[in-house]
Image 1 (cartoon, rainbow, N blue to C red):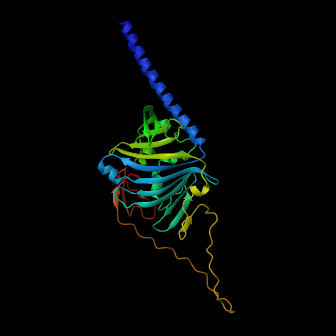
Image 2 (cartoon, rainbow, N blue to C red; image 1 turned 90 degrees about the vertical axis):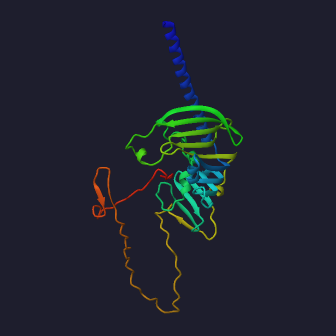
Image 3 (cartoon, rainbow, N blue to C red; image 1 turned 135 degrees about the vertical axis):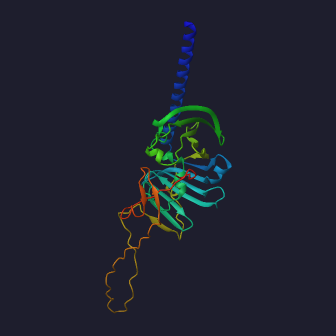
Length: 323
């Protein structure tokens, strides 16, 4: 009996040792990839982003494809540019895509209104290109692409190797703990709780990221790259296209306001007319439509209860991928 218990204990200890060893190996691969990314001066690759799931889910998910350029900008450091085509959902019209992201700046081209937009990356800009929030591979811009939420990981394991566009990759599967009710993460909308990293065995650069969100719906968003060519990238390849005739809208240097230059009127020798300074007129604020509901404490909220206060209403739903 004692011998049998010792055998069972040995098996359990071996199992625990194998599991710990597997996690150590997975973390070692992430460490090697972290170093490879840090030492990469730049690369170009083809990319595609798409979703997996039921036909109904795939129909509402965005897609992107085109060229990716990764490198360094003198003023902003690491930079990633994507240009090609994108769809907001499966049956939407394909639109031209040209976006740039760094740790401090975002830029994109809006073909519809013929503008080139540049803003600090931490600003909440109206009309920001929705593709900026679904780049996925922009984690490579960080000093440690794998550190985010790693402290919340409940499991980090190596799965069977797979090929991505002809490149044999180690597959690292990370599962995260569910956010606690009431936490900032639980109130922040859908957040993936599983991720698979496909990391090239030879160069240790990632080739695919699969983010999995499980809940009312199971959504898998995937971005993968192919034909990766490592080489320093010129600054011209990292900036979005400055098409002639497009208007530049930039808040990067808000402390240096631009002054619109207007031509002096022709006076033909006469003294210029003196005009009174214009008095700015306050814009008329639209009244909010009628609303009435109870908040989480049971307090009734209406137009009258909020009169004289600044009120922000945020609407979301389980079907909203960005939320």
